[in-house]
Amino acid sequence: MNELNVACKPETACRLTSLPEFDFRMYRVKELAVLYFPSVANATRSLSALIRRDPLLLTDLEHAGYGCGIRYLSPEMVRIIVHYLGTPAEFVSLMHPDAG
Image (cartoon, rainbow, N blue to C red):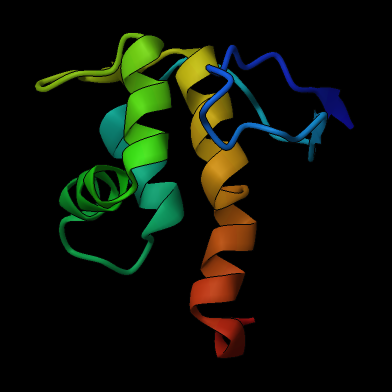
């Protein structure tokens, strides 16, 4: 397990102490979105909408530099997303349990 290196504010929900194995590197937003929404025509829009609907996730991402028009996600932003959504494989298996 990787250590969680996410800097979350005390009032947010970041409470995990470890994360599953995942490649925490810089991703293009579209690249990560397709991992979370592999069968959706506009994966980027779907991921952005999901982020906007979760105020805690959005706040933590904004503290890490996330904003409108961003094209790349830093490793810290990716850690935050994985903290809230799980890895892309976990997310897909939860959203589509019969797909595996």
